[in-house]
Image (cartoon, rainbow, N blue to C red; front, side, top):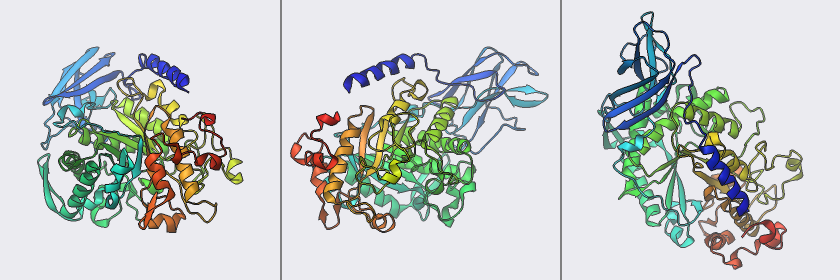
Length: 529
C-alpha cells in the first residue's frame, strides 16, 4: 500500500513540473493573461502573446464585476499599456471602497473600429490572501470528525473529534438587523440573533479543540430572494445558488462572507474550513440555479466559489475553501439538472484554471449505495447488478470502498494546486444508519460499518479528514429517509459512540468486533492497520 502511494506521489511531482497554470479561454484571443496579483493597493496584470491588429497600437485593460458579462460599449478602461508581446498593467485595488476590484476579473482589449474588443482570456486576482491581517492555524488532532450538534459540544474533546461540521444559511443573516458592518462604502445590518447563535456555536467547537467546518447554504425566503441567482428563484428546493448576476445580491454576499471570515478567525471562534454549497452537482434540489447544462452550471458555480473564496481569504489567509460533490461520480439517470460529480468537478477545475488558479479543495460524500445500506461492502443484488462501484475513473459511484477513484483523479497534472501539490481533499459527510425498514441493520452493524469505512478512507494519504454523519440522530432523517445515523440519540450514546472514540487509537477492543460482521478474519487481510 505504502509503495503504491509513494509511486503515485513521484508521478505527481514529475507532472507538476510540466503543468501550465493558466490557459487562454477566449476563443479568438491572441493574448494570454498569465498573472493577476495584488500587492498593497496595486493590482498587477501581466499578459503575453502575439500582438493583434488595432487602431492605435495600445492595449486597454478592463475590469468586469461578477455581475458584468462583457465589455460591450464601455470605454472606462482601468489601465493601458503599449501593445507588445509582453504587456504589464497596473491599476489601483481600491480595497474596501465603492470601487473595490477584489472580486473583479480583468480582460485585455484593443480598440478596433472605435470599439474596445477583448483579445485575451479573463482573469481574477489569484492572491486575495495578500490582504489578510489574520492567518489562523489549521488544527487537526485526528482525521476523524463529526457532523456536530452544539448542544453536545462538550463531548467532542473526549471523543477525540478532529473536525466539527456545521451548516450556515446565509439568508438568515438578512432577515433582521442589529449587527452593523461597513464594507466597500456601504453599511449592512445583519440579524443579531443569528450572529449571536454562531458566536456560541463557533466558540463551543473551538473550545473543544476542533477544526470547525462550515457548510455555506442559501435557502428560499421571499424577503431575501435577491441572494438567489435570478434563474433559480423557484420555491421548493433544498438550497439555492448564490446571486452573482445582480449587483445588489452579489454585494450583499461579498459583505456577509467578509464579515463572517473576519469575525470567526479569532476570539469568537475560528471557522477553519469553508464548504461552499452542498452536493453541488445535484443542482436540483441541493444547489438550485435553474434549468441549465452541466457546463453552464459549473461556470456559474465557479463565479460563486470565486466570490466566496476571495472574501474569505482576504480576511483569513489560513482558511481553506472547498467545493462539495456527492457520490454519483459518473452516474446520471436522466433527472433534469442532476449532473455527474466528475463532470462538474472537471468543468469547475478547467474554469478556475483558465480564469486564475487558486488553492481550492474538494470535499465528497461517499455514502453507502444505496444510502440506507449500512453494510456497504455487501450491496443488494438489484444494485450489485448495475456494477456501480469499481476502482477506475469510469466508476459510476464512489462509496467508502473506492475513494481512491477521487484521489487518483485529483493527482492528475491538470487538477493539482498552484504549488504543484495535490489539493486538499476532505470527506465531509459519510453516514451509517442503525435503523432502516428496507435493509436490516442495528447499532452493532452501524458501528462496524463506521469503523470499517473509517479505516478504508483514512488510510488514503490524500484524504485529510473523514467526517462521520452525524453526532446525534436527526428526526427529519428518520422520518423522511428512514435513517438514524447518529452515534447517539438525545437519550444517550449508541454502540457506535465508544467505537468512534477509540477507532483511531489502536485499541482493538473497539474495532475487532467488526471483523466477523464484515466477513474478515483480520484487518491485515483487508490491507488495513
